[in-house]
Image (cartoon, rainbow, N blue to C red):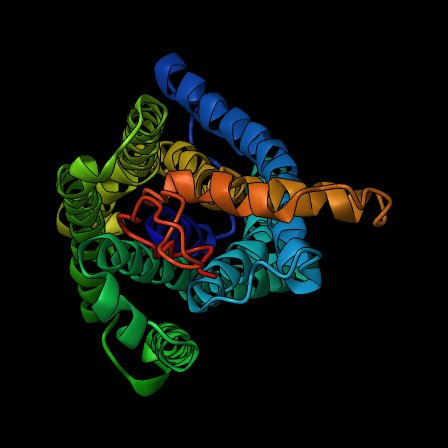
Length: 381
């Protein structure tokens, strides 16, 4: 799923293996082509600065998320699904710590034409190679873990009892290990003499197109399952307050679900389109004219800048919408000086993003309202 990172740095390497894009003694470029060259160079510079800032945001956001889960001040992250959140945050953190800075360096070096210096060219080439391998690992892992997390949320709402048996700490750890091993081996396919064309086709159709389509389908199924769940438990509401609370939760769940689909389309759809075009139309970069190569490289640079926003915003979209994460961060930043936080309120409010969590159960000689779905994927008791 890390299309544009892999395309950009890999194709940049192919393009920049020559000392200069044009022979040194060619006549001056036509005005339109010279303007295009200047536009691409400016895009390299702006992208390098932008990626440097995004790298800091990605590291900071995912680092805080990992810190909140590791320290766990309210003991509320001891669930199997939390492991998927940790895996997602680790993959995004490494993307911000390695892929974004290296791509920023490649862009700025391209702007300054540093690859023309024989002493710097080797460093430039090594950065490109490392970036290709790391981006294959972290970005593919991030999207596959997100797919597993969404599937767990769907199970929790549609089949809560099966979810308890299927989603355990052991199964979550096995899934994360399989994703990590697959991502690493996939990035090393060229080392096993697998043709580069075949590797890119697998990445395009399996890691990119298939994962994106399945994710969108799961978001739709998640929304439909939640509506069915509300109809199933609507008869259990005994007060107007409970019905109003349920409607408020439905609106919030719908808003979050639409936000996830929108963000997925905004951040990944452009890269999907360009990656397919690159594979089937622009694969042979040498057959393109000079202005076509410039336009393709400009598109890759801009679309990659859009894609990296996904990894910077993951903590906000998938975690910090839950109040328990926000409260845990506040607790950590205040060094534990706020002991009056009500953990029960954190648990109740955080469940609104995932499923309906109605209070009460039978017991102690007093009849209360029954719960609808008592399983909250990111905050199970």
